[in-house]
Image (cartoon, one colour):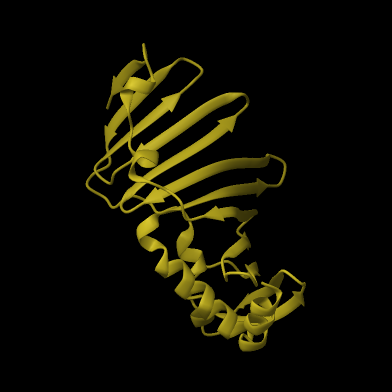
Length: 197
């Protein structure tokens, strides 16, 4: 294992190569789905944390706010939102839109709009700094991103992005999501109050 890690480290010499291999690894797992934890920090308001699961066009997002659990499922056509406080389930049309795939798009095409440099390197990971390039005119793109990539398998370990008054960190990324993980099952919520919109 140590020999393999040394070979991988020797092959991936530049930050651009590391990012390219990470993107290829993520693409190779696209059919398996992806899960990640997202922390959003807003000054004064604090930090909110959610866990997202994406499989194909389906999505499930879990979060807890002030002791209240909120879970949302979407298949691109319908969304179901469960709120534990009043044991309610709101069902509404998503307007035939593609399900939001979370923020996985931030991991793709980094080298197209950012100048990537090595911030530091540890035995287990590369820590990369991604600065928005002058040619990137997309106002919604973060100015900077801190990306950490595993030397073991090129999986992204975390991505921290700073943008308009908030900082978002994606972490605990895995590729083991199934369709059952993102499909709403009313049998798991007995007695729930249904609200249709």
